[in-house]
Amino acid sequence: MSTSTEPGKLKVLAALQNTSEALLGLLAGHEIYQLPPGELDICHIAQEGYNIILLENGADALSAIRAADPRVEIILFGESDEDALEAAGKGAAAYFRTPPDLDLLARTIGDIGEVFAIRRETEQLEKLLQAKYTFNGVVAKNPFMLDIFTYMRRIAPYYRTVTITGETGTGKEVLARALHSLSPRAGSPFIACNCGAFVGGLIESELFGHRKGAFTGAVTDRVGLFEAAGDGTLFLDEIGLLPLSFQPHLLRVLQDGEFRRVGSSHPSKARCRVIAATNKDLAAEVRAGAFREDLFYRLNSLTIHLPPLRERKDDIPLLCRHLLDGFAKRTGKNIFGMSRPAQAAMISYDWPGNVRELESIIEQAAILATGSFIDVCVLPSALREAPHRSTRFFPVSLDYVVRKHIETVLAHSNGNRTQAAKILCISRRALQRKLEKLINL
Image 1 (cartoon, rainbow, N blue to C red):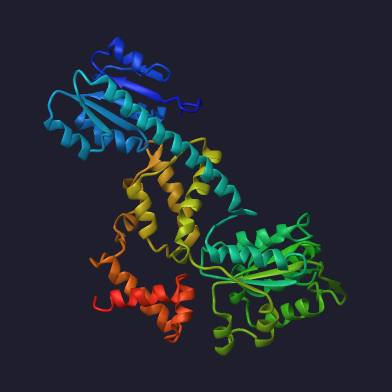
Image 2: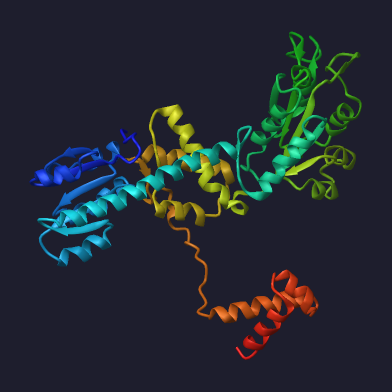
């Protein structure tokens, strides 16, 4: 997609029957492309990234153009004032009767140019924010997530065992990798395994290894995951699914740092750090007898709880941008953003599958998108049908709002007006005057 690179320079498509010399002179200094209205190609518009399209008698094409590229501003030219209202309703930036008032048209284009200058600055700020809020592969600006990042920096140099809790799909392994990369052992292996995937009695062999001949099929010595992790990190995902019969063996490793290969009488030393993760309530599992209490306390010394995506929806735009950038690098297909209806659908949805579901939906939508933007039509029906939440509006006066706020502050101050005035950053006398004014509302 080609875009204007010089600040203040606009990329203008003139889809007009006749482009006068006066109009061309007005557009001097911008990139101008001319095309007969009948040859207007929506796919071409989506790929080229025009800033302004001058379109003659093209009200019917407005919606399709805006869907192809929501960023483009369309100035419509026509012969009837009645078309102006229709043009505005379909998203035109301005409407001019032909021949246009060139002075007014020049001011309109200048105003649009200022808007695009602001948009360019905003895009640069968004890139800076994305870099600022990318924490070792984890993208977030939600206050709870920023607190987690601070906590991780504090424990990274020292931890031996950490447990990460959170719903399925919240990104526990991504966070575990970030914690490993912050530790002094970042250059050593990070090995991940799913405790729920171990088959029968092979779990001990998988984690601790075995000696040749230890059991049927053990034709060679095998190194287990604790040994393979070396001085690095072993990530035990779904620790809540670890069989109860094996839990004492894991407890011994975590307490004493020793394990034995299956079929060996000689202990080996575990040098790795351990990060466990679970979507289960381990305390409830202990009460139910499905998880050992002593192992629970060993794992629970340092914990990180990842909130679900529905509780940090302010991260969704940042995550979408991050995922779209990753998609572009993998596939070469650039998607520059999402339409406003698509953005609203993303925010309204509650994301039961969390970040994993978001990643899947973004990839699917990016594949299906025919233009440079994701529109709501390529989102799954669950998102399209999600109720769009809006703040309820109550038609009350400003004085009423002020009075209710003062009442709340007074209640917080136990009726102490001096203290309430300090909280409100006004004098006690000013507070008294406000109360006298508002008392009858």
